[in-house]
Length: 382
Ligand SMILES: Cc1ncc(COP(=O)(O)O)c(C=O)c1O
Image (tube, rainbow, N blue to C red; front, side, top):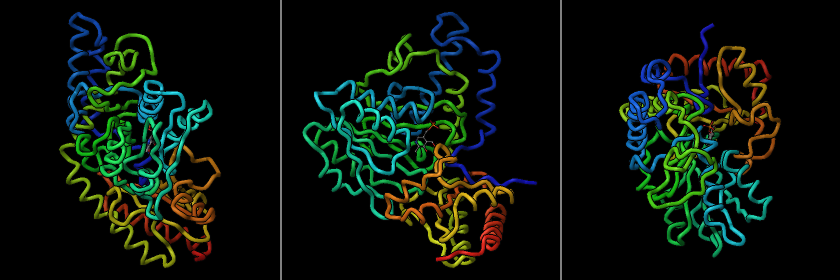
């Protein structure tokens, strides 16, 4: 059976050009970029080029890019590294209720060790109101960490305004941009952030590689100690094939993002319009306009999102009930609950996330399959 993959927020397939760029580094170009001989210098060139490619996509300087193992590590580096560097007697970290676990868990861990934490609420559309941030800032606030785009519902935060609020008060600002980079234009200077996390496997690159942008002059306490790699900001011999793949994926995204986003946006509209027409009672979640071009989260009243997802899977459609990292977890989506949904509503949600290779035929197949699944389950019960 031909399968339809509509779970690109969980991960994306490796783009062919990315694999092509990586191949030499899995074979002949195996040197250690820290070695001074010819083999090392060949590898170093690949590393330098990737750094330029990543920097270019987010309008940073190459020396502001630190490679690491992905979004989770980048978020941990930003949060722990800032608090440990700037600490103070009783540091205070502000984040939001709708962050990925890779932000929430390090904050929880800091809280268990005496750090104060504040989780800002969101509007029913999933936005953090800048006024809430203004009100939460205190004299000992060390860091604000708010994501650029949400993985479950796709809402894009008013990050420029939020970062301006933090900057006015001289507080460090980090953003988890894992779902945004490669899908919407991201400019670290326009956003006004000190740190930004990104991940290879969300933009057609390989898994297990990512980067953190650290603004020039901003100091983070390193979390991995050892060799002097990444200008002493992250020790360990670099994952060169992965990094080269991440660089290639960023360069490709810079070239194709405009056209890809426009196509995904129109397919997403097709999906949304058809679902609303075929399944009266279905509701959409997230911001209607300030949303990722590829993400549609819906509530199917009266049905279990997980059961629907499993039946869709049987019909050849891969969708999701939310963040992959928490699937298998019976808890309803905390993102939807923070947006004001009841537990039942949150359990009845389903996420479709498209990719550049998604076609209109696949959207029609997914709609047909969902309508059949809903009928099999006895229909929606608004
Ligand atoms: C918003 C967000 N942040 C962080 C991560 C973690 O990234 P990685 O899988 O590269 O560790 C994810 C992955 O789902 C994500 O969606």
